Length: 87
Length: 70
Length: 189
Ligand SMILES: [Fe+2]
Image 1 (tube, rainbow over the protein chains, first blue to last red):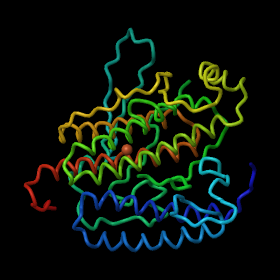
Image 2 (image 1 turned 45 degrees about the vertical axis):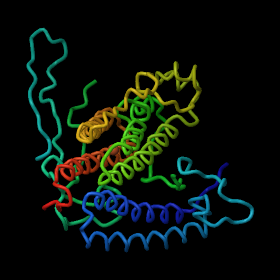
Image 3 (image 1 turned 180 degrees about the vertical axis):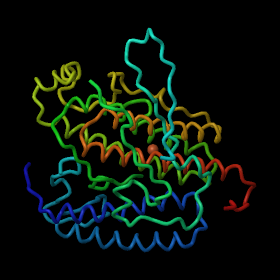
């Protein structure tokens, strides 16, 4: 299926990728530094950021996760292309 | 560059390829850090994603160190 | 359980239709030090290691699956729409005969993936040293791949993956330090 996604999609996606990357880095770091309270604060801050970004993307481009971690539109929109390797 | 090391392999007159010169290897920053200290300076999220790490102290840009020869 | 998220960890791009690059990239897909081996190695070790480092093994193991998806995406993009002729010219004739352009878990020499790549000794120190070595070997593989590739967009993604191996290696080293500590004693910085 060919859909031309708007430039905004790639921009929003990259914003989420950036925030999620910070969260991955801090997750691994906190796994070995469980008492670093400043980093825990930063982690929680970005965890909130990612919630907002996920919502913004999903409202326009459909669910990012399933098994109930995202709401579904009607009809069921999880199977809708494109998939990550296709964009 | 601090994290790039090299050595010159022995070259025999009977080796058919011209000498490559230096042979390179890497000793990236994590080898000098047994345990990451608290409060290291950070990249911005966008920059961290581009670089592959949140911390400049652990960033090691890699480029092919050899000449192109065909 | 695991939840899939419909996005790549890093935006993967390739500049040219070049199946030849896919031929050696597959080393990190189904090779001994590849991303599949890494993910399976760490997740499997979790059952026989002190609780303190199970979280780390879970999280790095999970990230490795994201890297596997990035490698798959690179191979997919490099071979997508390539004609049989192009596949043959790229030295992928044997692959095409067996798989068309389907991805397959094998290394750059075509050797199928095997569980023998994944060590599990049950000794926490032996296993963590194994993991550190695996990360350094993956880092080296990414270096050799970057050395051979002239695709700037592909190299951008490969550099990201190489840097991740550096971070993973450091975290495993820290895990060793944590296991060396006396019980309940805080790691001193
Ligand atoms: Fe890794």
